[in-house]
Image (spheres, rainbow, N blue to C red):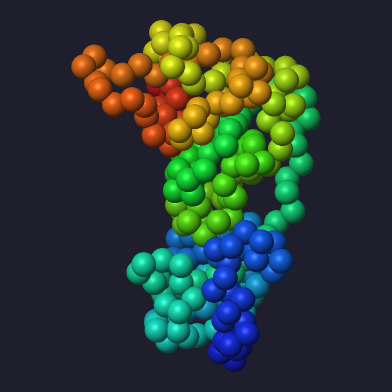
Length: 257
């Protein structure tokens, strides 16, 4: 375990500004907080700065062997934190290169998630965490979907970013020629509970307020509906909840054993 001198004012200012997407790109960093999130992300991403309380280092220091760690007082970590309640460890990781788009053959035999204009960071983080739970390793996202390395997204994933690749692209163009079924959720779709679902394909989930755009919807080959329980009166489901229901139904044949 290596130890550096405490934060400089310049570094403190830079690291505290990473909730801004332009600043993340400029510095090449994103932030994660909390033991689970930091330790899981450290398996995949390179930490440039790690700050922790002395008590945290005594308990978990060996799990970050080889990383440079600053020991700070809790109050100093709170100054860097993006959370209401600061955690005892905060790490600043280097932004990765964007993964390559899957080639045509890579879609075969896989279940891939596609997100069209999802805007809420909490929703995206929960979706990525759900994808990880359901064994989905590739998520395609429209370029106007919220940045996966937004601090709120990172925290909501609870480390899932270490195992799920998210690729920002032109969804309408990519989905036009994929060699597998393309599913999407619509209010006029077929009842998902009575529809035969493939073990391979792309599942498209849309914007919180407007659903799937016309351009992306044109590439959907199977329109699905998650029907409400009789008597239900809400207008629509939260997109993260809808994603969880949809993925669970696609994975049901395997999960049943």
